[in-house]
Every structure is written in C-alpha cells, then in structure tokens.
Image 1 (cartoon, one colour):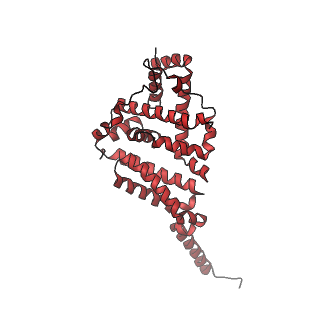
Image 2: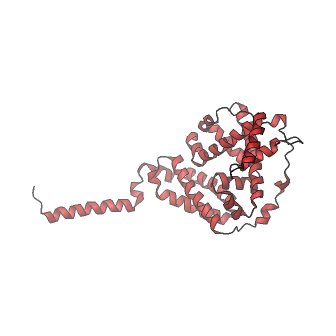
Image 3: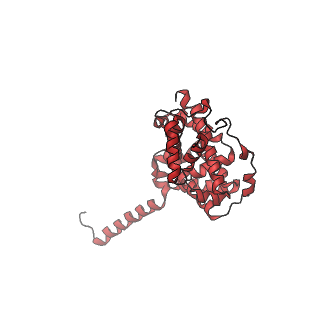
Length: 225
Length: 64
C-alpha cells in the first residue's frame, strides 16, 4: 500500500518523536558501553574511598563529606553515558565534588573550630633541616634540576609517589594545600573558610610546598624518575 | 640581601599574590647567584602543573 492518509503519517511521526524524548529522559537506556563502569563495584568503592578521604579533609566533618561524595557520585553516574572510560568518569565525579566542597566552604562558617586547627603540633616546625643558620640551603637539601618533569605524568609509578608525598604532609598543611591547588580557591576564600589570617596561610602553604618538593625530589627525581 | 629561606617564602607567596617590584627585584638578584632557588622556582610551577594533571585524572589513565 503506497498511499497512507496524512493523518496516519502524522501519528507515526508523533510516536517516533515520543520515543526519542523518552530515551532522552531516561539515561539508562542510552548508557550503552558505559554500563560496565556502573557495575564495577570495585572501581566505585575505590573511587568513593579516595573522594571521601579528600572531602573529609576539606570539610572537617565526616557526615558532610559523605553527603558531598554521595551527591557527586550520583550526579556523575546519571550522566555516565557521556564518558569514555574510568579516568573521564572519575574526573567528572571529582569536578562535581570540588564544586560542592567549594560551595559548602564558601557558604558556611566552618563547623570545625578554627582554633582547634591552630593548636596542632606542626606550628613550630623548624626549618633547620632545610636551611642553615643564615637561612641558606643545607648543601644536601639544595633543590636540584628535575630535568623534564612533564615526562613523569605518563608514568604510573610517579603518581603513587605523588600520592604518598601528599599523604605525608601534616594534616593542616595538606588541607590548605589541597584547598589552594585542588579546589583552586583563592587565599581570601581559604582564610575565611578555615579561620586563618593571610600570613598564617602563607606560612602553611610555604611549608607544605617545601615539604612536597623535598619529598618529590628525594623519592622520584633523584631516583632517576 | 635575601637568604634562601626568604626567597622560597616569596616564591611560594607569588602563587597567591602578586609580588611588589622590590620583592621581585630582590628575588631576581638572589636567584642570579643561587641555583637552588632557580630550581625551586621552576619546581613550584611543576608542582602546580602536576597537581592540575592529577585533578584531571591523569593518574587513572596511566594506571590502566
């Protein structure tokens, strides 16, 4: 039958259009080859664990951290179909989490008592291991050339060293370092969020960078990395 | 005349705020004579680059 009444054709088009709309509203239908990531409990659990560590360090409150991580993961998994692999999905989850943490920190005055942070022991950490009495590098601590540092980015082993060095930072230094470098908050935002003066913050960031630098140099760049 | 401890302090702060002209000049003068602090400055940039790459999941790509 070659001839179809116009009314019937319209109906068919309508059906197709509705199906297309339904598929759009229901991401599960279009998840396609990303389904394996959603079923990969080990990957999800490992990701959740890492993010929770990060978020609780930033927010100083495990419940807030759990909420933030959960929201970020649910948010990201809803649109899992648009990612081409684990790295991309994890990046996306992390991006959502970063925004969430940054918002939380901006909105509320810290639930963590700022003064409790100041009481930590590392306050009077001294620099005598790094610098001599005149404030010049101790000979064995003087920064060396790192060669071509970009090439490290492609070596899996480098990232393990990097993570170990980050974890080696005292908690307070780690926290402000991550706020600055991971969340990319500016100095004023960090000071407001954790109740530090600008000069406190400069001191903490300076120490964290000295420490991280030393660790990366000793554990990676001087090891022929 | 800056010592290395002061120089690294300024280099760290330059990641959060612009340095004054005087600060920049004393830093330059120090670095001309101090290879350790020249390396330190480059390494601050490296650490920032590495951190950004980490946040973007570069480490996951390499683990695969």
